[in-house]
Length: 193
Image (cartoon, helix red, strand yellow):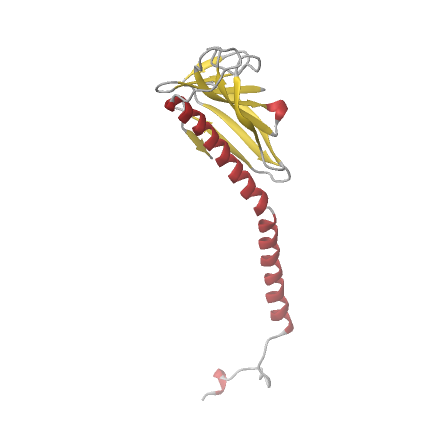
């Protein structure tokens, strides 16, 4: 073999250099830190997903009760006009399903009947915003009401009522910069995003 193709330096021992070992250890450390940080918030993210799905199911339950014509005893003695779900930003840890007894298409504590227990949100989960109607105005209270038999959907606050209008509920989890938006379509179908 000609002399030009021979290596200039000869290595007497085969192995890894200290620099190569430090680079590999650093890369493993960085990847481990990324995995640890991303998995640290996983339980809270799962709780947020679970809560958003539960709220969606409860809205669907109220819709089903309206379609099924379920009857409950009203506080004011009249017939049930439909069912709805009521949210209040001041009460961020729970919400309720109600039977509408006064035909006003929104929750009135003195006239309407609560169906079942208060529905509690999981620990560290809260309602962060309620957006009502086509303009998306932020409200402190919101009723999503289903008038049988179709059911026709009404979304109401203290000051306004919209028929078949898209609205949204945002839920968030403490300590994580993530939230879930439940978009209630005019047909009563709920999309979680």
